[in-house]
Image (cartoon, rainbow, N blue to C red; front, side):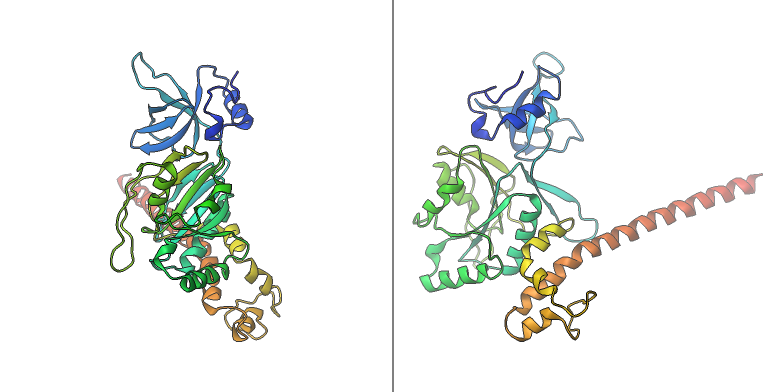
Length: 354
């Protein structure tokens, strides 16, 4: 019977009695638990509490870094171990690239904290941050904002950046660190707890890989310089789960520029709670917040209580899921129409032969 002591190091990876119960439901005593640390084509690396093991992945099995899996022996003697099942995910961070036909992709699973990273020497974009926050809240994990490279700006610029970030994330903790000088690193300590998983998300050049290397005490991930225009180089090309020597697990992710909030309506509402509350004061329940008489949000912008950019961002992000649903409906109707025309031609040809 599997228990949390199935391997000495499993609890440090986040294993608990809940995962043990999920493994027990598979009713296969030959399967052993492991956590996915890296996914490659047809293969993946898993941690079993004592070592890292390469295992094979069958075609069609969707895996994500952070997954808990049940691993068994290969079909023949000498074959690599194989994944027998993926245990039910508790928390999933998904993304979809912008554009028609966007496909949902699992960025990381079974995460506790989403660390949203943005660098002071880059382009601190509140609009990007709002998208990341919406997806973080939607995942079920707890978001924390990390402003990196604090050594690259004077104190007054740092203070302005923090104020700007808090204007769009009032209830979210904001940390300021420098991986170069070590300033603020002690503020990360409460989050780096044994068995807790943190996913690092942000634009390229935000210093995510540098931070992982510093916390790991060794260069486990490649890093690169930031271009002269402030944009980062995509040094991280894959996701990887890193077990820290001092406790906790980190998942670094490739920098993401295009982010869609499709299927993240609840996350958008959570990110813009202040606007959701203001909207309750609109004169008409059908208010589109586009300048109608009696619109509480338009009044708040006019009075300086609400930034127009934040209102525009809210309206744009709210519209994305509806737009995606409309595109999907059009695509489905197009497929059905093509099927109908094809069936009609076949019927006409059969009728002509008789």
